[in-house]
Amino acid sequence: MNWFVLALISSITLSLRDFAVKKAGRELSSAFMSWGMNFLIFLILLALNVVFLNYHTITLSFVWVLIIAAVLDSMATVLYLWAIKNGDLSKIIPMLCFIPVIQLFVTPVLIHENLSLIGMSGVMVVVFGSYVLNIETWDGFLSPVKRVFKDKSSMMMLAVACIWGVSSSFHKIGVKQTDALFWAVSEIGLISLFLFPFAVWSDKGNFSFSKIKHTLWPAIFSTLTVMSYYTAISFGPVAYVSSVRRLGVLFTMVIGIIVLKEKVKRLGFAGGIIMITGAGIISLFG
Image (cartoon, rainbow, N blue to C red):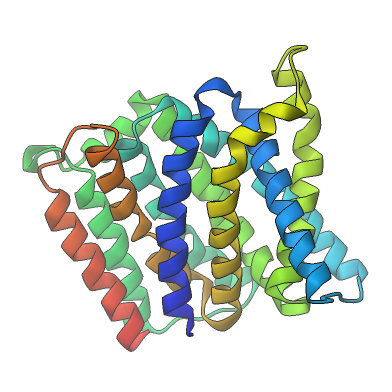
């Protein structure tokens, strides 16, 4: 199984996670949802590491990479879930398509990944497709950019894209020093530890471990998303993997339109075709 297939699997499970969060998070604060989901993911991954006797020697370099990644992802997770709970999936999820653009500038510096020209072109085609996907009319070509400054949820998701665009490089460093399963349980465990005080505080005296059951399905889909993503970046360039994962935007928007009855976009099909074309370029020539 190559990185493209793993990235595609990650895009599908990511969409299912977004839908599960949207449905399950109505009665929970964003901080509690973030902590509960990550804590359950940690327990699942910890069990897998124990079953497979998967362990590695911890180095000081690994610890620093782990702390930086966990701090960045903790902030991003809270903002991400807040945006999903309070905004329309079909409007805010496309903001995440800017992650590969951030990575094009960050990965050469942090992990020395130099992409081919045609591969970079494929990344930009995917990003452009996601942009078209978010345009209401041809007269409003800049409408997605304008919406960011008008809609708080879109601003939050754009901030998430910037953070994840940087933290993904630290993920690859951690995976290369150990493996996908060990890195996942280490980082998710630290994230859940960081988020616990915020989960208690956000519930304003009503904190209860029993409410964690509402995060079960988001946690299951997130576990599949995390493992397929971390394994994919161990095989392929981070920007390529992230670009293919952006196809999850299509799945999420379809779910939002069909299940949540969100508004259908006029240029959705055109944007989807462009994104799929970009993914094909990356897969074949990247």
